[in-house]
Image (cartoon, rainbow, N blue to C red; front, side, top):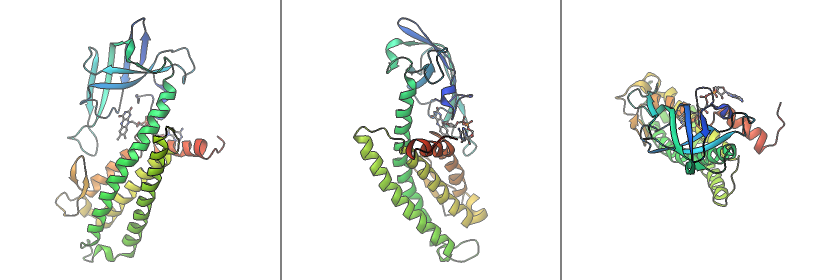
Length: 271
Ligand SMILES: Cc1cc2nc3c(=O)[nH]c(=O)nc-3n(C[C@H](O)[C@H](O)[C@H](O)COP(=O)(O)OP(=O)(O)OC[C@H]3O[C@@H](n4cnc5c(N)ncnc54)[C@H](O)[C@@H]3O)c2cc1C
């Protein structure tokens, strides 16, 4: 989806697909494409009618990542310079068969709503499971000695924050089950924005609690109080904290989720 000039404003995308009888010719660039360096195919939002209003001229095509003209350039992340998950992807006159079109021509905008709601809903499952692991590690941290020599769990602030995170994590599981049940019944619901917002922000609060508690020890890669990220193994709490910022940006930033919740879930007027 994302391009250098189209992130939150996805409808501003400019990667062009010229429509021919039995194929498209795709030209343009995507950015922040997670996992493109491993992918066999990509699900790509392209502009098929440049003269239509910007939400109407978009289509979705599936592109073979090994097709001539596809270029992938990894983008190292600030949090982990040796593990690039991101890429820039370049399309230089890539020929895409016509039957790789997903849904009707020029109807990609409605596909994006379903696809993003699905991504946000599924992110709940990942973040709720990961949060359980993070909370378990925070409980372990509470039993350790802090930088001031006292048991970390003896601090009322630590205990109160951890208790509130635990309550929120349980609320997230239950909201997630409700959202998942609706999804299984075929409802594509903007409520998934609530899960995405809530999940990404709790994860950030949890990592911040450890980072603030440990002070400079949070930076120490040899310190025993590791956090744990399933895909990366043990990571220092500070890195875990920095990684949580990605969660508040991907699949639509927290500000965008708040806009969606205000307008499409609560029905508040646009200002
Ligand atoms: C970990 C991670 C993985 C990602 N993976 C992918 C991927 O696989 N594929 C893909 O296509 N993209 C991916 N992205 C990109 C992501 O979707 C975009 O970064 C995101 O949509 C924001 O777009 P932007 O970076 O262009 O920021 P911008 O849209 O330029 O936003 C900049 C700032 O302005 C704020 N802002 C913008 N518009 C509004 C508004 N209307 N109201 C209030 N505030 C606003 C934003 O909240 C943000 O703080 C990923 C990003 C991250 C961090």
